[in-house]
Every structure is written in structure tokens, then in C-alpha cells.
Length: 132
Length: 408
Image (cartoon, rainbow over all chains, first blue to last red; front, top):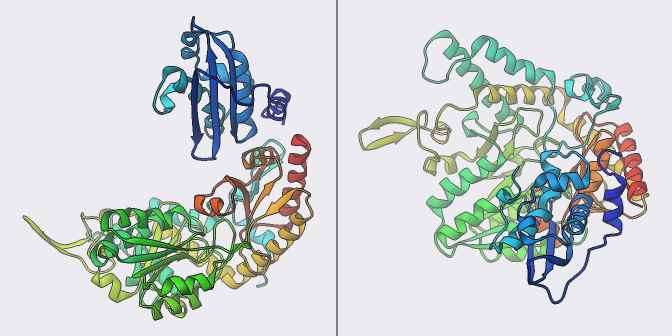
């Protein structure tokens, strides 16, 4: 069990640090994983230099999707929007510290997809945002 | 010969494997697809090793053998569902394609703007979306039979909707989530009285209990080979002869024509006019072998085994704190058990169970409207077949306690 549900994932799933709403916020985006119904909404506060000062997520879904959102937001506070644009799937996998098959990969990457779509100011989130 | 599950299991090579070293497979996902007995694998292998050729046109020995085997399989499938003639068995890729065939060929020819189609809240997406597409194109009105809280169709509402004179009623014989077995014979008779024709989705019924199309008096029946011990890529549309004959062809191409001239063609007869191009020959032969296999064990015996397992599973699962079952009680349903656990996403249930080698499905099982009806995004689902044992259900329950421990 350790391989997939590491303590860090269970911990961030049960006691997320960045779950909630951020009012006011500068950037917001939401998307769902149609296959399993995972849903993530992310809100960001950005300072005039383009640096993320605070972040929150809301939504529902499996432990992997929710824990990866919490870990991802924790990792981007203090980063610039340009730095966030450079994040790839490996960043999320490193945070989770596990290997995932193709089905669960979608759960893990949903939050990054939402984050990047919001940062780029896109109308919709696309899988190309989280390609290798 | 009495039903012996351990002897049955010997026929399924995959059931002997381990998912990881030391972790035996507990396959509880037969509603998604069944495992295949060696009799089916051997029939397909023998075809490719000995008789492989294209069908219907060649006159050489292999082509004759291939054609004979392909058509013999059709005759066995006809007998299996008590179809009056093998000509009423149209090979398709699967249930989905069979339903699309009716929507495309029958629906486009015979439905006009304002006509109504009656569906139910219980349907798999494959018995919804083809009708949505047709309704958009032809300006049809769709109505839905609602569900009761215990997972039955509301038959009073069904009778009321029939008074709106739908042209077609399409519903599932058995729900792939709730396991509910609908009273098809009674519902079909009522639909006929209201002047509708009926398409029955038999994807979950034909594999699991005896289905007699003449007793049901059903107009169209759709089912898949891969859920009944056969291979993927082969399914069946059964239709009443006068309906099939009146329908225009489905896809165009070789084999579905009698003659082709520059600028015109003459369609072939039923069922070939619906089977364009080289079909899934080995798969059809494999499905014929699957039907033989199921008949040899006996559909009544398989149904009885599954009833017993389902009753046992429901009894064991009801005792798990925080576990909520969907659908009717034992005795009113087939071997499908969908459930949720308080505070734990079905994906996580399925993932942790996989750690113990237990294969269940998690998600909306291609029945999103049904899940919306019950106000839940997803469920975990365990399903049983002729090779499932009580010990496997015990392992499922132990696994669920492990899930609760991990997330507790």
C-alpha cells in the first residue's frame, strides 16, 4: 500500500492546508475529469510583480486528485506566473512521490491543468498543458 | 452434471494468475467484460491456424470453411436466444453498435419530427446518446421513465408515459449499476398496446440468465459477445424479420450489396445488408463457442449461482459500517453490487482493493444520469459471473475493511 497511498498523500487528503476560497482573488479556474467526476477549482492572488502570494483550491474527488492539488498549491506560493507556466507533469509526480498508471495520472494532473489554464488565461483546460 | 464453480474456474486461464507475486486475482468486474474460457480461445486459435479466409465470396476450401463456421455461429446464437431464424441475427461490433444501427437505419427511415421516444433514467449511455443524436437531427421528443428510491423503474409512470404514444421504447433488461432486472415481458406488452416498438438492451441479461426473444415478443434485442465469455469486437442485433426487411442498410460497402453499378446499388438481403465490409470472423466464431460453453453449463444453473452469490454479497456488505448499497434487495437483482463508503471516493476504494488483487470498477459506469438521480458522482461496483466464488466475496469484504482502516 505504501507505494500508492504514501502517508503524505493521505495526510494532505485528510487535512488539506490550501482548501477553501480566496476573496478577492486575481485568477480563478475550474475543471473536471469527466471520467471519474473529480472536480478542482483554483483561486490565486498575484502581486504587481506577477508573484503568487496566496492560493486556494476547492472541489471533490479521489485522494490522489485532492492531495495533488494541495501539494501543488503549497509548491507554487512565492513563484512567478512565468515559473508556473514552466511546470510539467514531473513536478506533480515528484510532489506525490509515486508512480501512476494512465488512468490515475489524469486524477493527479487535474490540478496542474486547472492551474496552468488559469495562469495562461485560457477559455478551457486542455491535456496538452500537462504533456511531458 | 451439477454446477461446480471450481471446475468452471479451471476453464478460465486468467483466473489462475497473480496480479503481483503472491497476490491472486479476484476478478469482480464481469459486468464491464467477462473473462474467456479456453474453449473460446481455442476456437479462435483453431480458426486462425487452420481455416482463416475471407467469407462469402471465395470458393476455395478455406473460404468455404470460414463461411460455414461464421454462419454456424450465427445459427447457434439464434438458438441461444430462441430467435425464429438465424437471418434475424445481425452481427455488430457490440451492444452500442447494435443500438446505433437501429437508431440510424430504423430511426432515420421511420421517425418524423415530433415523434416521441421513451427511455429510462436507468440506461447506459449507449442506450441514451444514439437517441439524443437522432432526436437532435430529426426533431424528436425524448421522455424518461423515472426510478424509485429502491432502484426500480416507476412502472406507474411508465404506463402514463406510454399514453403519449411514443413510437419507440428503449430500455435495459438489467441495469449495469443497480442490477435491477426489469419486467421486460410485461413492459413490452404494454408498449405494444400503446403502438410502440421496443428495443431491449440485453448487454447484462443475455450473459446471465435465459432470454427468449419470442416469449418476450421483443422487436429488437442488442447484446455484446465480450460480456458473455466471448471476445471483444463482436455483438448482436436481433430484430423481428418484418422490421429488419423494411429497414434501409446501415453502413455501405462490400458484402451488404447484391449488385453495384455506376451510380446505383441493390442492397443484399437480411442480415447481410447490415454487415458491410469484412466482419469480425474469428470473433463471431468465438462467440459461437461461448454460446456453446454457456449452454453446456446451463443458463439456469448460472443464474442460480449468481442469485446465491448476490444474496451472500448483500448480506456481507450490509454489515459494513458506513457502506451504502444502491439498488434493489437480493432476489430482485442480478449479480451487480454498487456501493459507496462514507468519506472515501470510489476511485480510492478501487485502488486500495487492487492492492489486494481485487478488481472492481469505480466511476459512473457509463450511467451518469442514474448517478445524478441518486445525487452521487460515482460508485464502486463489484460484479459476479459463473466463475465467482463466495471466498472472493469474503476477500472483497476484508478488502473494504482495509480501505476503511487506511482512510479512517
